[in-house]
Length: 490
Image (cartoon, rainbow, N blue to C red; front, side, top):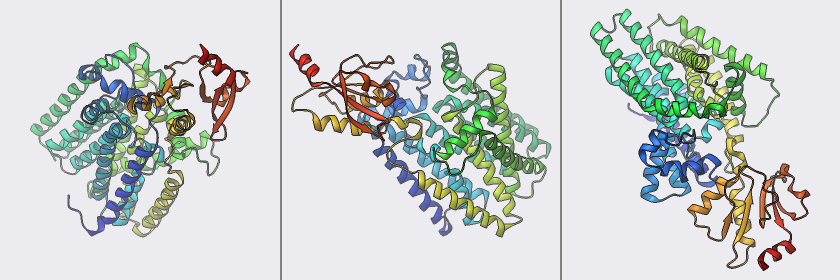
């Protein structure tokens, strides 16, 4: 695909986003799940990573494998562990540009489409984290791009690329098995539709179906054992939700808002807004299934079918296998699908009401940019907000310790993995860190205790508060001097 002067805006915006991803990866401390991924799962033997010898959902297979490769070459550090996801974020940006160029010829609409795909500050966090979510979204975007190419010109290579990248998305995060199922169903319907229109012959039909079948078998071969192990140990308990509309859509909206409330909206209103928007897009898309006069019409149709097929797989999976509906960070799977659907709808209306649509797209883009700007930060990731003060605590302890002194630090269990990462990778021999635990540790009498203020350790006479963070929502307590002296005397 060639790029020209009109694409400078797209490339420029992509560079800004990529720089933002790099800055967040560099400045924000390693989070709870990242620590376990980098220090443990990515260091397991390759076979153990792929086939889940330790069946815990923190192990996102492709992410663990790539981190293993990078850390074996350069050692374990914050940026080395996050570089794999950053590389995949670059892929996401590239394919967002590519698909926007296919969907519309107007440069301004292309920019609007690009911004829609990057409109979610919560989703954007995952492009800077050493987790498999960012990889999965990037590979999903690549898969959607080749699906669009396949719809325009059915070729064997394109179906292999689309399904192949969706398989890699599954290996990045098993949640994306829902998308793989939806894509496979969507692709099958498209193939049958092309055969009905005589766009492909019987021999091509058989080959296309055979390709789908083989890639599906390969995917199942890689994920069936991990899924069985996770199910047998009840690892799906962490994402339970009672319905798609009540949980997934509300969760997506709340995460999109990034804890910022411009106006007060009740959950039922959120569901209504989502339902109306998606219904409009789907209604138009399905009415155009028989209309093949332009790529925009075909793209809107396939965007509608892909969304519905994924939703059908998601609901069927819940009913048949009793797996939970997607919630929280697992619900970001729907972000590219909804963005694709909305973008395709904008392109469709542009063909008939170009001036009005350009103005509407401009307003949408402006509001999105404002929202992203207000929520951009270099302190924390929304999902793991509680780890934002790790660097400050370490620096505080380092500045206040005496030369040669070993500092004892106990923490609430949610903070421990982040501190353990830096103690291990930065060789902080002066820091003695309490091992991982879930039990309350207020009576352990370690020199320093870092916790949430809700733990109310201030009621213990052995400790006194020495420093608070974020309005004292997180606090450091210190053992009273007399007890410290007594400990040293022993």
